[in-house]
Length: 411
Image (cartoon, rainbow, N blue to C red; front, top):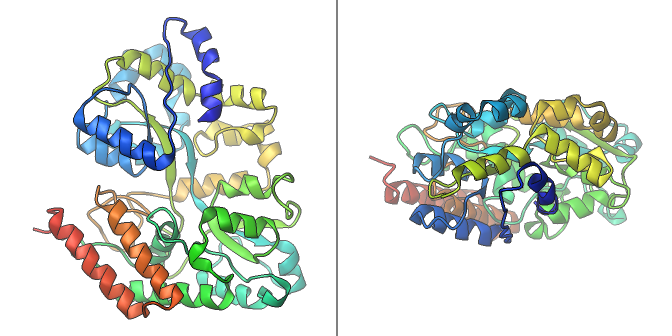
């Protein structure tokens, strides 16, 4: 977003009659301010940064302008923009009732990182598609806390976007779900118990101390310093771990798919940051022109020229980026895996059994931010020993049912 703001003068060269005024905020403040504005129809913003979680909720609430008619209104922009170049899974996550409601400027999934030097020393080979059982076995072989090396680093910090982002994918691939078709909570079930027991044992035995304080940033630091045998997290970390200015393991980092349990469904998450036009805008046409400029193939090339490297371009949005020889040269070790991970993440088919919601690592209802964070605290409690797994699951089950009742989902 900082890069996009700096490149706004390039937009003005193309559209000199449109003036862009930026309001840049931290993520939590951004969510709060924009949600209040679009929900009340105040019209303070003509364009908004909206997460993949919010897009279907806001679209159903009638808070966002559908983009499909605007692409029809501007055939020249539609031709040069080439919507079919936007990754299918990303497009699908931003489509509600057959209409597109946002376009992505960044997208990610999750994958497995491992230290090839540690694996070689232990005589291990990472398969292209590991299972969680294999991850546990590998962790036991490379775990050496006396030398400051831990078998596996996983998110333990409570939060719907922190430990629950990872753990929800574990629940999916262990065959679990948040709610059944009647919105009855499914957290106190064998699948959830298997996933939570496995997670707690794995991190307690083979993770770093104080894991409940470790989120994405903390584990990135540990991994980049050579202190983790493995790490399962966001695909965006591949670039950081491959950058000599921020990583000590650039030559020894390996990449594999996110682990699977009893089913491949929902084993890797999906997230994107997107640009959307609030229904309350008074500048729909101008907003559409900026939105399509800032997420176009030409914009991605502009970032590469400005930054001097294709490694800096917005990832996860367009097929053409991954077909570009310059990008493949800059990100060749991981670009194909990132692409296949994003393409395989399906917000509409993330669980073994049918569910009434969309989302891989989240449930696309407004109440999930609070519920996900609450369950994340119970999960952290099980990891720290504050609760047993059974106690944590009972508390989580009660919280989920309360959310479904009070939200009017249970009939």
